[in-house]
Length: 156
Image 1: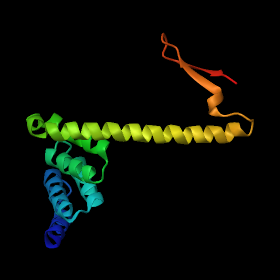
Image 2: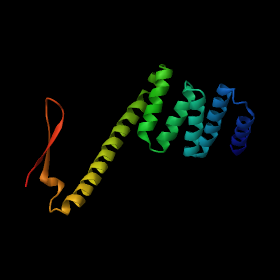
Image 3: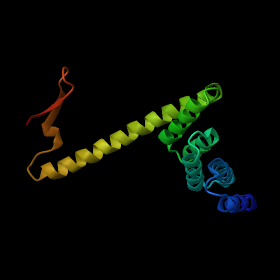
Image 4: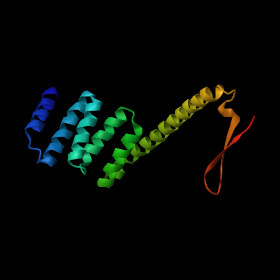
């Protein structure tokens, strides 16, 4: 694998910049070697280079999606899989289970990140408001059903 990776690196170096499709294939093939070695950041970088060279290169999106999945970057993995399916719709039938799993994990990660952010914001708010003898619990947020806007009310 190391020899193959080095061969792809040399081929990338020697290939003229004008041969974008060939360069995209070489980057994606080197990413395959790196994928076998579990070097996920490098897989992502090579697939990004391949996609930059050829934005319709389905294999690069699929490979980068797999790398993002290995890194537990669920949303990124899902977006690349969706793009691959958009470019090659017949993939939907073979990738539907993986897409459903990524959607579920992406949503769970989003909810976890949202809770963590709200907790940090509340902590920051309490730090500032604590200097005045208050906390964020002294305020109530109400959404206007007509406009969708919010109003904040103080409650002691």
